[in-house]
Image (tube, rainbow, N blue to C red; front, top):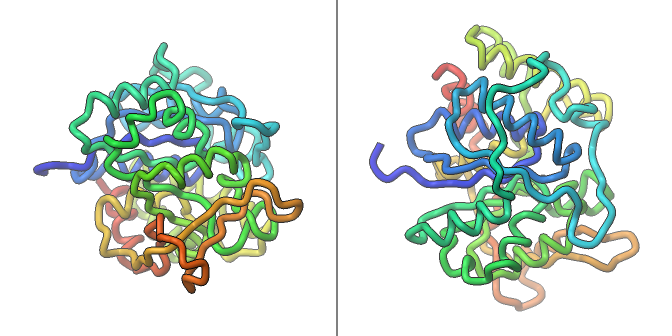
Length: 309
């Protein structure tokens, strides 16, 4: 495939992060340059372990670098009620992964990769934005070389508080730095990711594939769907994080609006809210490409095809 998109996947695996990794690893439109990990769904030691385990399963030969263990200023908050104590509850993995973590810190790896690039590197954060914010603070020149930051986070409503989505809530100060960095930002919030629910029909299609990776995803989604039914009353699990990679493979799956998004960092009840100005009432310059609608069949055709591959 000529000119695949080069990406760094900055993640906190997480069931849906794992599926995003599978999609990135399987598609010739994507050249995965590195995986960096951050505390989010679970502690960073566990998200790193999960990333290494997924690399083993997928045969991925890319550096995996561990990143921030805490948000920039607030105490750490994790989500074991959604992803389990390991972050990837459901399947059974070998106790010790074969792949080893890089000696380099995730922030240093991000800075190095971006500065060595030709301005063609995409950052794809699917967890809290702590590593990306720290990289911008450490080397502000990277903002001139990042092609695009493709974020899973935020929305016009919340899932961790009434107004705040988990990834943004965990480190809103980091999100504020990223969204105001001047780098092009494409945002996949809950408005779009809740359109990706893995229905019983989708689960059946995946289970019928019958290869080791599809079997793993069946186990992941069985657990993830159960927690979403119990916690939120959903009919299945939304595959939040895979939207980012799906967009880089086939942008036509999604509809977008250019909007202003500001991050609330002080509100008593609204900390972590992404203030999405879809009606342009502020008159402020748009800073985000905001995903609004999804081609459901096209999205799942891409994901199921990745599992077959």
